[in-house]
Each structure stands twice: as structure tokens, then as C-alpha cells.
Image (cartoon, one colour):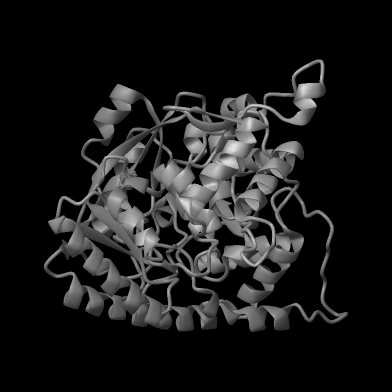
Amino acid sequence: MPEIKWKPQKNSTIPLHQQISDYVKRKILNGEWTVGTKIPPQRRLAELFEVNRSTIVTALDELAADGLIESKVGSGTKVINNTWNLLASVSPPDWISYVTSGIHKPNITLIQEINKAEANPNFIRLGTGELSPDLLPNKKIQELLQIDNGQSLSLGYTEPKGSLSLRKTVSDHLKLKGIDASPESILIVSGGLQALQLISIGLLRRNSTILHETPSYLNSVHVFQSAGMHLLGIPLDEEGMRYDSIERLKRQHDAALLYTIPNFHNPTGSLMSNRRRAELLKICQKESIPIIEDDVYGDLWFEGPPPKPLKCNDTQGNVLYIGSVSKSLSPGLRIGWIVGPEPVIERLADIKMQTDYGSSSLSQYAVEKWISSGWYEDFLKNIKDELQVRRDFTIKILEKHFSDIATWSIPKGGFYIWLKLHSEISTRKLFDLALREGILINPGSVYDKNDNQHLRLSYSYASIEQLEKGLIHLSQLIKKSAFD
């Protein structure tokens, strides 16, 4: 479905339906909406253009009369022609067939709607998993980039594994977590998501099976699925991912790899116990199943450091460890890292060079200076204090307005509260209702397609005022919907 930002001018002398018809016609004639493009439904167009539905009907009738669009019951309205197509002796490329034939799978519709809504500054975003713009260190970054002549900054390509200076700094940073990793065993990547993409195309065969917690962040992106992999969920309990079924699943499905977020799990916010980490590492070593340990939230603890990463006790090179500053410093810098056996890092570095020729040298410079200067640790302390205030405030709102309609656990760090609704209300229906009221939420089905009872709440993005207003209104929508 095409994205539409334009709106007709209501003070114009040109009738609204004519403005809309002309807009759509320009999109078609310019080749932006090609043959086969599906036009949004009339009701949706009326909302987007902020006009009556009858105005939309008139505009579409004109376009249909010009032979540009066609409506069919059951399949909606599509572009069927443009003037060039009518004049040409051969048909133009069928771009829609190319789009649907692409190797990379499209996001689920719900995720696409969330991504679009997040671009609207008027929404209260109760599910967004990133730091609020108010918490980002914009002024400090500007100060850092006031580079004097004595500092070494290169704007050329870095070496395949990334800036050596940054890798040395990351190596020292990881020692604070108990991970002993030389710069040679570290690859700088453009965020944790690229780390997963490189692993999916660089280390695994098509039709491989990936084990993961359920619910899981992996279900909200199609990194492994688009590379021809299969995902298989393992339930969580109060200590983290259960391990008792791993041996059976390895035998039945020939599982190639296990993915886990032990620290402040996305979406549940849970923290894997020390005992469970040891058990998980032991069984995966016994079954020769490599582990991807995604630790992008690991620095964001509130009440004492979390247990040591799985990588700390990995003496066999069984764990690929992913870290990033996207959640703890700035999503826009797009800098993360993979730690693993050197042959693996060499392989992934080679693929990264083939795909983007290295992460931004300017971002690498900024992150290296930020961590090595000690600013990162100072910033983390402030951010954790702020996030804890927001978490505690959110819990108070939930206790006051949600205690009779939902249950939850209190996270010890990270961004998320996994809210379980008592009522049988469809969370997809609730998403639509909330969206119409200017509130954006993340239903549990984003992380487990069979989940229709949970919401992932985030206290990291919305302001205190927005959290209060948005959550109270959300509770009212839930209670009202439960009785409809």
C-alpha cells in the first residue's frame, strides 16, 4: 500500500475531489504508482486526506473513467493503466510482481503500520523500544565532534573488521563484563540487526532451524526467515529460557543455532538467572549448538548488575556475543559489535565488506571517543536513573488503573513491561482503537503470532506526561472494549 503524506488544500478554488484526482493521477503518470499498485480503501483515503468519503468516491470515479484504476469486489482498487502504457507497443515492467517475488520477506502488516505510525510526532508511543529524543546526548555528541587538529579522524573506509582503535576500546569495555576478547575476535557492525543478518547469510544453510525464546524479538523481523531459515520457539519461565527440550528439538529438527536475550529480554523484560545461564550453556555445548547471545540491553540495569554474560564462561568458542550502543547511547549512530572465534569473525567481516564496505567511519570515531573518554559510563548512570524513574512511574500508573484488568512483572532493567490482559479483547482490535485515539501500542502477536493476550509496554520513549495520559486512556479503552 502506498504511503501518502499529501493533503488537499481546503481553501483552494479547485474542488477537493479534483485535487485528489489530480494527485493520484500524477503519482500514476510519473511512474511512482505502477500498474498493479493497490490503492487504499475509500475509508482509509478519507482519513488520510481528511475529507468526506463521498469526495473520495467522486475522485476515484474520475480516475476509473480515465481508465487509470479499476475496482473489483474482493480485491480492492488497483492501478491498471497509465498514458504511457496506453501509447506504448509493449507493456511496462510489472514492478508489483518483482516486489512480491523478492527474496526478503515483507514485515507483517502490523509491524508496517507501527513503523509508519512512529513517524507521526502526534502519537503517544507506548511500545517504542528506544530512548526518548529528550534523553539522547545531542549536545555532548556535538562537543565531541568539535575535532581539533591533534585528533586522528579518517573519513575513508576502515579495515574489514572495523576501526582498530574502536575494537581495542570495545575489548577493554567488554573486560568490565568479564568477557576476554582480543580486537581480532571483534567485528564492528551497523547495529545488532546487521549482526543477525550477517550470521544468517554467512554461517547457516537454507532450511536451518533456529531455536529461540517465545515470545521473541526475532518474530518481529524477518532476518532468518528471509534467508530460508525456520524459527522454533522455546517457552520462558521465571528464570529464563527453558532448556529441558533442547536435546529433543536438536534431534527432531537438527537445530543449527540458538538465539537468546538473557538480559532484559525483548519483549518480556525478563532476566535469565545465573543458574539457568550455566544450564543453557552446558546443554548447548553438549549438543554442539552455537549460541547467539544478544546483549544490547545488558548495560541498562537498575538494581545491581545482571549475571555475567554466557560469553564469560564460554571456553569452547560456542557463543557469538552481540553488543550495541543503539539502546544505551544512540540508535542513530548505528554501531554494534559481534564477538566470536576468529575464523567466524573473518568470515562475517568478508561478507560485511561485500554488502556495505564497513560501518560509518564517523560513527565509529564518535563511539570510540565516547567510550574511551569515560563519557559513556557517566551517561549510562544518568540514563539508568532516568529509566528507573520512568519504570517506577509506569508501575504506579499500572497499579492504579490496570490492577483489575491485567498482570505484569517489574523489570530490573531495560525498556519493557510485558502486560497480560485478563479480558478476551482482541489485541489487534485494541491496537486499531488506540491508534484512532493517537496512542501507539505493540501487541503481543508481533512477537508470537499466537499471542492475543499481551502488550509490550515501553517506558523508555514517551515522556512522563505522555506515559500518564496514554496509559490512563489505554486502560479506559480496554475496560470499554471488554464490555462491548
